[in-house]
Length: 341
Image 1: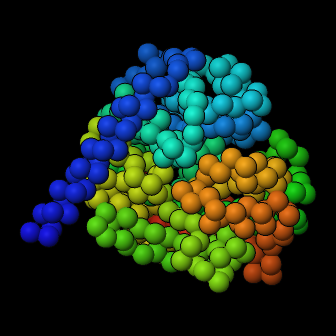
Image 2 (image 1 turned 120 degrees about the vertical axis):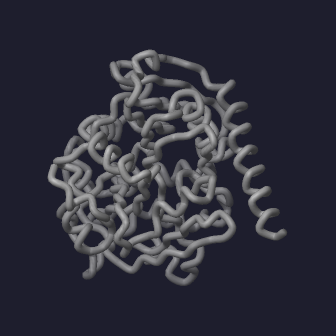
């Protein structure tokens, strides 16, 4: 009886999230709608952005290189030129959403509406503008090849570790030109430790560790940020992201990723949060209070970031590429690398 009750509760939770998305979709204002260009089999990318003009060129170039056919972007009141830049992209549709990013479940209600309208039956990449998805052999085999591999095995998605990159010096000091690749501007990361816990009843994983735990949560590691995501899913109208893209329903989707050190095929989201503008963004977040469900609990975190600390320490590892991450067991390959490209 207990198991049936849990299944019933999770079904209603999923329906509640879907209805939230439907309601949120009514408030989206289309600015440029090119969704008529979307063809069967197209790979789609979804993101919510705010003031990301500095990151958007590399973001768009990276995902085009991966094989994304169309971008569906929600802008939450940007005032830095992001809107004009996005309007000019021929493979992109754009909506405006006013109001609270936090009240919209950190933008997921808005993206849920677009996934329902346009994502059904498509392979969908759902990411933030500061996240660049990579996976084993990504520089030779694009998402069309990867998703064909997953389709052949009946696997509906792929998980990833969000890997925080950081500079060697203070966070506010640039170490390469603004138009340099992310991995030239932020060359370092923490290779360990990471730990994964399965949480009932959704079976969602909770991966924690890395540099943010080392710097900010060494005394309270259970409060460290969640680092696992499910950025690539063949979308079905019955699916719903629950907590950003960290977890999803139905629960079977959460079994797609079990954390670092596993053999299953997985990727890494190279996370560009700690570019020099993080100091200004953290000062703004102290006022806006939009990026955590309990902003007061993370006030010290953002306050520390405004002081431009140095994250580098003797055990920091310089980023070299996907083979390095595979050797460090921060991503897995399954039988993907056994195939001849």
